[in-house]
Length: 180
Image (cartoon, rainbow, N blue to C red; front, side, top):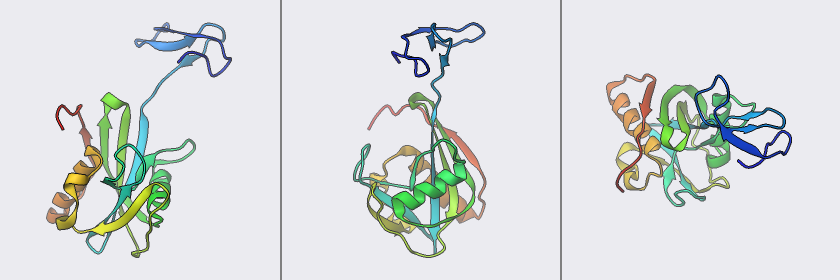
């Protein structure tokens, strides 16, 4: 950050009094600019044993498959974000069941949250950010073409939990990927 979004003055990096981390600080107006993780929220929506996936029309990972999900907006709850992202990316209406996974990805400053959801009817289409949208049973999931590790992790856990009929909230920490 070069300039204060509050007054436009040049900011300097320093540790503010009473803090422990380096921050962008405006000496003109006193604003401390905090940079916080981004929340990515989506839905793991099921219809008749199949999961709704979207093939990405945008970068990163254009052409790969993912759950309908995206960045949370201001003045929106996580549940509202999951519903909105599913409408935008898959043109689908879902009923949220429960928050299912929370994946901390500290090295990129993101937290991914996926809700278990029901697709009440198989009505969906590709939104602006999707090339196509489809329902997949476990055997037909395009595992090698899943866009994000958090999505792969949530899907694999879902199928394991479904086999045991034991769903409960899970948290994970993803470390940086060292090989591709």
